[in-house]
Length: 203
Image (cartoon, rainbow, N blue to C red; front, side, top):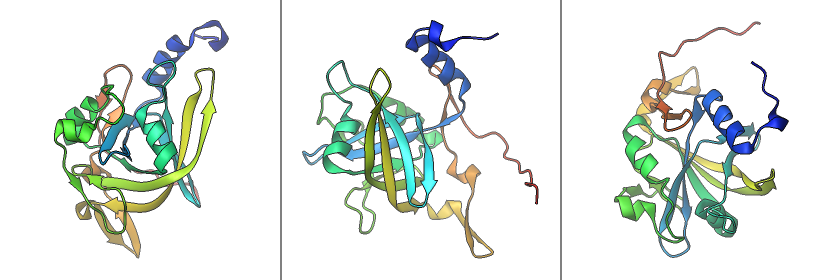
């Protein structure tokens, strides 16, 4: 089957892409509401871009026809944000934070989620995920007909749960099974890691 994208509407292409670009990592993003509370929202259009400097990307849409989503507004205004990698045990809370709420209403407070301060970082991390990236806004670009917000964040600090980290020949090795990351499929589908395996690269 061959499908010419120019002949089909964006909503159909979205469904096909999200069902086939799988599994996708999920960024569970905490940002500052500016009123003493925190916004928390998941995004599965997310990945790493470069390591020098370390930059990650999230793609954020609009709340309605005239209003950016809260994550976009908060990062635009306060610059810093925290990207968590949610685990299997975070699944229900993570999905609950996708609910659309009025700007300034905190998903963290609404769900009673725990927060923990991290040394020298202005924002806290959410208790639960075993990985958190503390980022600052690098740039925001509007792309596409829908003017999607491509948010690039420079990673200034990485936090890892001690239980997922090992030392091997002077290198830090992260155990993916212990990270237990939740991944996005199409529709309402999610997945977990299967049995990891390795293949050696050519010399």
